[in-house]
Image 1 (cartoon, rainbow, N blue to C red):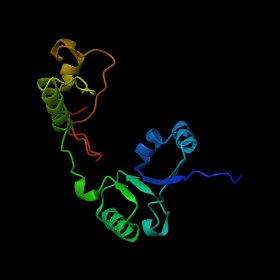
Image 2 (tube, helix red, strand yellow; image 1 turned 120 degrees about the vertical axis):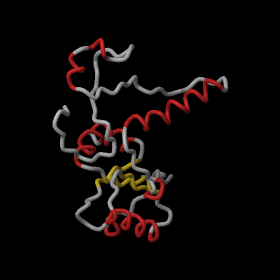
Image 3 (cartoon, rainbow, N blue to C red; image 1 turned 180 degrees about the vertical axis):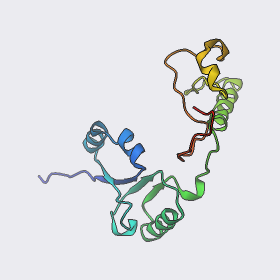
Image 4 (cartoon, helix red, strand yellow; image 1 turned 90 degrees about the horizontal axis):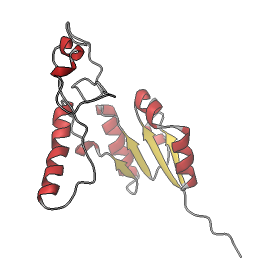
Length: 165
């Protein structure tokens, strides 16, 4: 009796180096491989169209050149899924607006009688660095461990202004 070989799926990923180091770990690669998924790093120094073929392209890049490459790849490989479609990507200006949308979804689900299956972290904005030292200035409910992030949430590297932390 002939052995049936399960189809393997090829997922190309294109991430900034920082995201790649934190996201693509050996455990993820091994877990995906065990489930029939080959995660393949896309070399952004080479044309995307010359790589693959991929069943799916997972990316977090948003340059004009990259959008053109994704469009060309999608035209030549119509069965390949592109996650996230460049047309559907909208840059976030700050973390507050990002989490406000999730909070609104949670509130709507609770109002409709369903419980939310996700949550948003407690957050506060501190504009003056001196207030970081005085925990009484923090909102109720914030407790250690605390993660501090800049308001800008779109991956840009910002030069700190005088007085910023």
